[in-house]
Image (cartoon, rainbow, N blue to C red; front, side):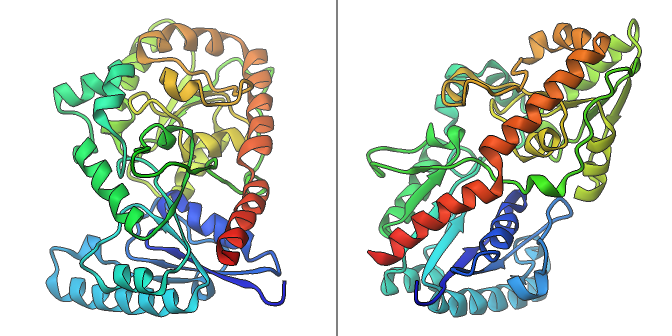
Length: 360
């Protein structure tokens, strides 16, 4: 390759995956990757060198502060336009606003673009409720967090990117919501994580009182209320420590997970996310409800204990009482992450996809 491919990752840093990816892409001499982010929170990290690799603004969260909102909106749009012109290819997260100049600039310049959807952007409730009783119940009782999800919203978002001739890159769950009348194909890709940045701490095979950890960022989408009830019932007859981290920084959540022996991810959405990946990278057994259509798409050696809330209490008893089982499953968790979610492996695949797009 004569010169490096220039990649823009925008406009969010959801689950820190863009930052993780940018850092790994920049480790190659063949790519220069930069990011523009229009909002952020305490749960995410911007990687090795935020000042060099990112332009970061607070647009969405300043919506109630008109002056700050307009300043951040203007600056974010300026840097989006600047980086779109600079880039050879674009990776876009979430939705895109057709009324903003950056959309039409991408279209006018015919920039190669990958789009990565990650959750409520294209999740289709009509599909999920057929396969996931916990999601259906949360919708019906009004405790579900992501209330904007709909088939209409999913199709609208997908159609916007069809107008840009985008190529979707999708994890197993998201591939279920792709409208094949809009996009005939997609590139399958797992969530990626830098597994070497996490300390491996397998559950102690000789420990009699385990620590169970749950770190919900959005309690209404994780089944946290039911998890608390289960913990209270189990405490009546079994010895363990329950640690819950809510509304704390990403660093605090990671610290809690590192100390635990069992990690509880989520029990509403029907798929595992980045928190589960982080826990498995540290060598923890992970409990998470995975609905059958997602399970059918996962590798057969996935070690996640994919139980629903109805079975969680009984299955947890076995792991509370069996330290050897906790240790064994923790080791399988780490192996799974090394094999399927390692950012080095996935970034290599992503580089190939980007090179092919740019060459067209």
